Image (cartoon, rainbow, N blue to C red; front, side, top):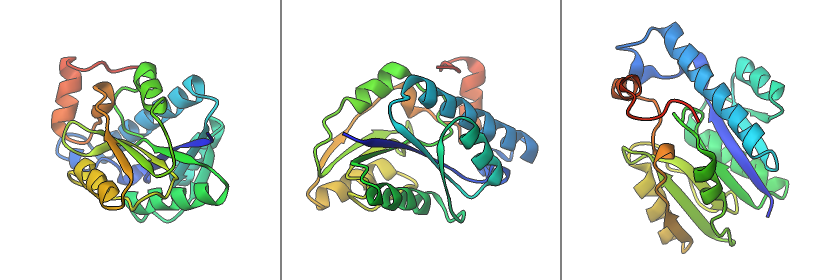
Length: 201
C-alpha cells in the first residue's frame, strides 16, 4: 500500500517559542534545525521505500529537505493543522493511500518502533494515533490521507481519537515510548540533559 511520510516544519526562526525562557532565538533555531535534519536523515536511511514529504514555508528548510532527497510542499506558514491538511490533499490527489505524519522535533526516532507503527493494519477508513507524553500527537497514520480533520494542539491525541470514532473510522491508540518524547518545553531540555531519555536513535 502506497504510503507517504509527512514532516511538517515551520520556519526555524519562529520555532520553539516555548523555550524562550532558557534559549536565545538563535539557539532555538539551531535546535529546531538539528532535530529536523536528524529525523529527516533517519527516514531517508531507514525507510527509503516510502515517499518522504516535507511541508514548510521556509526556503532554508526546503533546501535542506531537497538535499536529503525529500519531496517538498511549500505553503504559507498557517499552522500545523493547515500544513497537514495541505499534505493530505496533495497526497490524496496523487493516489497515496496512507499518510504518516511525524513532527520534525521528535527527540529520538527508533527503527523498531517505527516498524511497529508501519506494520499496523491500514485498511481504508482507519486511524492510528501515537500519543506524546503530554497528551499530544507525535505520530498520526491515516488511511486515506484525508480520512478525518486534523486537531493538533493540547490533548490532540484524545481529539483525534474522538474525531475518528465520530466518523465511524477504525481507531487505535498505539503508545511507543521513544516516540512519545519531543522537545517543546524547558523541562524537556532538562530531561535530555539528565540523560533520562536517549538522545540519538
